[in-house]
Image (tube, rainbow over all chains, first blue to last red; front, top):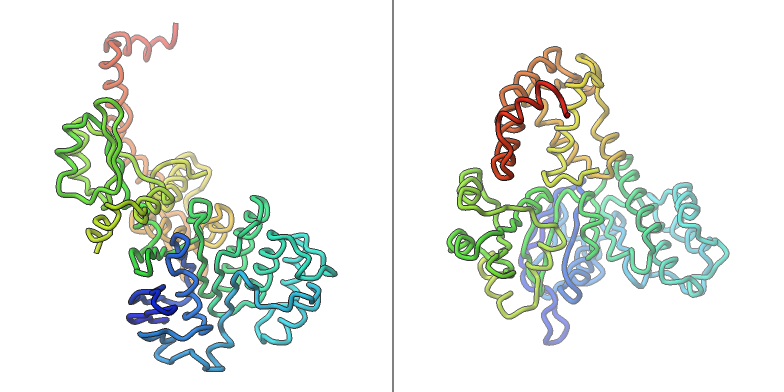
Length: 297
Length: 118
């Protein structure tokens, strides 16, 4: 079990991660969702022991991973910079990774290089944005590390490469179950892979729950304005829009059967809200976003 | 796949039920593993497992320890019973509501059912 307690990361006066408390059970695929600048990378950097927290603790089964050789060996953290030598050719990068990591699966890495159609003779510095991301995926998945952290590794990948990435990720996870944390804002296309989602916003934890539970939270209520207003009174409203006399309100919080029946009896239509929309509404920067977030706490 | 609005595990469970009802999956037959389902539909295996767990609860599937999941001997009869109970509420009632809204008389519907489209 990975336990974060009141974790805080600061850069000078800027608070990037603001007191996050979180427990992650091993062996699951987690989706870390957050807007740009929400603190995803800072949070992951501390989790991976690349950075020390300003306050709070990280514990892997009770032990602090920071500068703990045995624990750090079990972590693969793939981030934008890739942490490789830019002048090296891909073949050498892979060779180096294999020497560095006892768990590295060299044959699987070769397979992935073929899947992503990477040229082993190319230098890292000569790769396109998408190829660079693909190399990150190769390093991250072939590491087969018990804790694999992939921080927005899909940048610049086209739809075909991303589909290949998701397919390989799932297949290798099924064959070699481990803890995988994937940060993303391309939510809709990958949400099905996550067992749990973690949403952070402005350095704070907004949501951590099973993906199915999260998906069921958003409900769009549509109908005559007066009937909609009466039904949604006292509930957490994420968004509202009107078209003539018809109003649509996005609610946060699953309705039970009785409530749903009551809404339908009042002439209202209920529809689920996509994960992407739910996320956008939850983390929107509008002034009333603050009120919404307060209501969620 | 999964264009339906219900949760994915529910859709997996419903798909298996349909297969049992139609006879595509025979009673006593082994169903694919959660991992096979996950790989095929590109979903998390925990989601597939949730669908299976629901079917075990409902008595449609049973688990043989260390081997896998199998269709219960009485699954088809059980499902038919359930679906028949819900047939009028789930299938006929919405049709009648639509008929009322567009002014189709019950007599017309009965005639259609008896004689087919004219």
